[in-house]
Length: 400
Image (cartoon, rainbow, N blue to C red):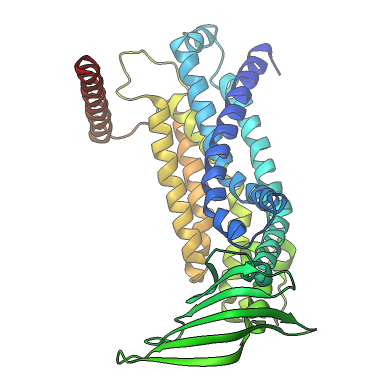
């Protein structure tokens, strides 16, 4: 590899690493926050939360890597063009391949990395994550005996325990049950206890009342000396989990168990997942080719109507959306299976055609003008809003 190629490789890799880490951190944070209630509501430890949060990473890395790569390639080429480095390389008689080769090598390495994560790490992370979620949902006893907080045991079933007494008894038990449509049951007991044996978990309530509201609006109150609430159904259901095609390793998808309930329900979903696994890793290479077709040639600063990175990302978003669409359709309709391979292949061939013919891939003029105008109006609006806020703060400070 030549000195210029090593320089371009080093610069692009640094940009790729930075873009991937920041994008991964943002996406990972949104995914973690969506699962925060699951751990906190079931009283799990911080260690369980961080383990579950870590297991999310392999599922989002294959999605983030292509976009981080296109940002790195487009930004590097745009900066080199602004610094006239692409002009110098071209004037020295070097071909466009000098610029493209290190970025293609980096894209191939990113594709291999994406394939390894998607097929080697992600299925096992998903399985472990489902085990943790099932264990958290099955830990209903710790959920029930927490004091002073309403806890959701099942859809429409809530339990609150007022206090834990020294002899292991529970005091001030409140249960709200609206699982049966049109009927609301409210239980209140002064004392109670959670009893367990080998295969049963029961909440025994003593000295209480039941308020029952029927569908026609009638309200009845029944006093009881002892009432048993069976929790075994919920613990058994919560402790189990279902393995979907995305949770399975690639060898299993190619030769699934005929007794697998998910396979019996929808065999095409397994075939569609195989097609996704075999094409998902191609998108880093596809996006690198798009970025090279958009920003890989030296151009005058007066030519561009829109920043090359915006053009490259806009085209990449369309290609990725199309890929997601046909992949999702292929899980239910086998006619879409060839299109799963056609989308990255056609996008690559189109980009290679622009690169070989020394043409620049650009958005239509009407699209570019619309994006530029929208960006300008947004900037003007934010600027005027910021000025009004500053003026208001200044006026408020002067009045004080």
